[in-house]
Length: 580
Image (cartoon, rainbow, N blue to C red; front, side, top):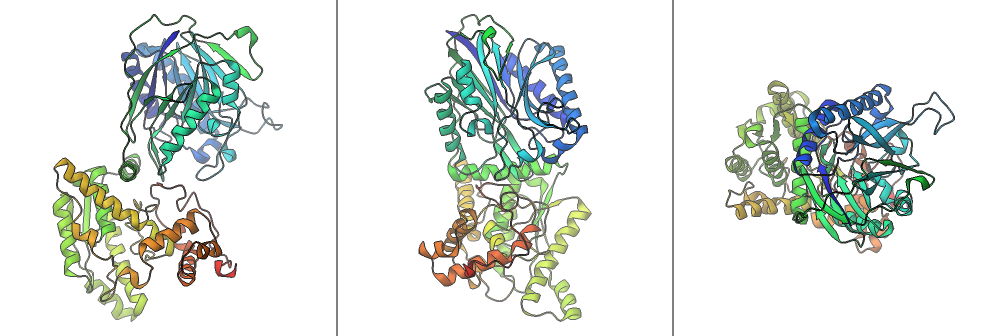
């Protein structure tokens, strides 16, 4: 048997930061070397960050990526790690004329390279380019066709990138035909609820099909609306788990593999397979270490950690330090405040209570209580004088008067953002966003919306989970219990509650899940048991609010279908579900 100590560097790269990402590769390669690794790998496009979107279409960026890769190979050798093979994802281009009849056309590719002894010794281009959900890779990348196999310590390692194993055949079948002992898959797979189970089942199935060990290495970190959760996996040829990395954390997952030595004859290379030998000699026998297998977070806890990581990286990667948000005393702003304090530290979170003539005493008390519990910066700015000034000039009534209150609050938050340099957080949730239950340029203002993809029913679960987690740790519960238990209200008129205008949130969220995520029509919703008049009201609200959603701030994606990149509908449309 042949032994191979594999190190999977589950790192947090930043799009466009080529020097910073190269430094990250060097740092974690040094850690892998210190652990005695024979091979170290980094995630999909780790050198450029992922996804690069239309940056891939810029010749200057492709050139910079290629140059950074060559320089990185030399730097690793200078660091004393030249003998340690490093696999890293990066942006490259196809050779002119190889994939297109127009020799002048730039053909960027999503690639992986093997660096060894100061050189780029092997290259692999992603075969399957996803065009569903948040992905639009076929628009910016050209596909690869060859499988790269690299021999390391007598073990043949086949390379693949993310979508390559989500599709049948392709690199998986080619790896089996080439007799690879390890299929190493570099991934930039965004987090979604329950996706870890789907990945594990996929990895196990592909390992059985390829008849070899499969190592699934995933990126970690936030990038705009996406959150990458790590959760790297190594499975045996029979599909059983050998090792697993943590969720939402950088980590070096080191696992000792014991595989049959290679029997592949390089002189008999299968068509479509490129073979590179890095080291023929098998490793001297050594005592294998126990493989780490990180504990899984519970389903609600993993969503909470995704929100924290998404906010933290959005703030830090965009060069900001602090945030400001309105504190109404309600559950949404309380949860956003708790997430912000966990992500950035309470010293970097500024909460503003902005009571109106209709604000209840318990709401004002709950906002102050939350500030005491979390330790965030807190101030009170009443909006009554501002509202009265506008009303005196404009004479607004009804809904216009209600919206005016929200817009005065928005002006205050954006003014403080400009004056003090904070990022404003919008506190609306997915349920409200779906039905347009927010005031444009009012409570919708902000540069980031942590709850944008979180339905109201999940807001309650997350708030309860966070308080229970605090109790478990012997800490103060950050969210006032009264904010969780009281009926939600915008408090824009006397005695107002959300259910004056909306169905109960459990009913609303169930309809929205089917209509928005499941793309079910009116007839299907009624057939599923929902009252026809409730269905008609909800789908009408959703259809008419597209213009609001188009202007809403970005926020972390935690579901299979988030508003924004996942769901693209026309603003101007006369189609209504009631017509079907």
